[in-house]
Length: 338
Image (cartoon, rainbow, N blue to C red; front, side, top):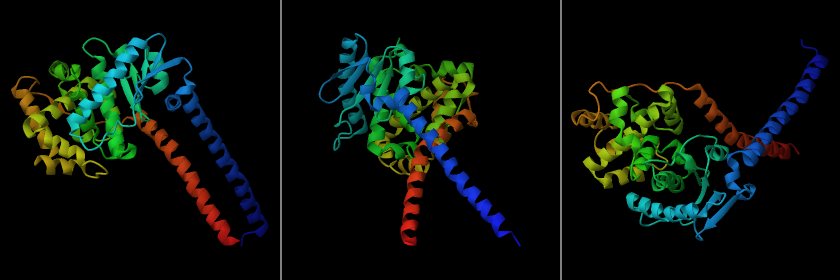
């Protein structure tokens, strides 16, 4: 028989330890939030924190820019409206205006400024309802229009379907394919054959459904898979339009809201399985000598760094919910006991 006094001491020690553990976790979480909003991407939600930036607006869209770059900022402001019209026309969206509330764009002149606002090194990002552009990578055949319409399409999808559904249920290959197809010039698409001559491997679109899948693909082959991936989904989206028509593409996109089976929906809309349609596309590429005959699909590997990144994202989102639910249940129980 257990000693009641000894048992009571254990329970008291447990009660003392648990609150302190929770307090430490809460303090760390609060510190992460403060760092995120005052030194990380969270600052784009509060532009007043970016005291070194100026802004220009047309009473709908707003562009924040650094230094004496008012002329380029005005160009971007004009292009914002042009790209929004192009996206609505491409999507056949005539009943609603997803851009009616306006769009905020941050125009960074250096990779360092861009990284501080996004924590990535891409050409552009559509994050937290904002667009951030990296001017240093908008060079050569990549125009400002190309960069803006690509990111504007991502923002359009988020606003149309909602943030969570666009992440969990909207296939990333389809979103990136349409966004890249909208550009006036796509270096990855037009050079896919050259990339495949050097390394004839691709990741099948059936495994590029979620953002973490896409990020894993981008890091494959020391980053050399990224241009092939963008070129692949762009040309595959063009193939779908050429073979089945733009209306089928629009129908598929309209049926992806909270869709738990996007691949099955693809088969229903296009009357062919997604994997088969992709194989047929690759066959047309080979027959046109735009891809070598030995081109093969390879599996998507597990990337531990991507796993940790999304584990952190889930923690930041779910931890406050956990605390809220915990507080509600404890309050209800406490009131019942009274």
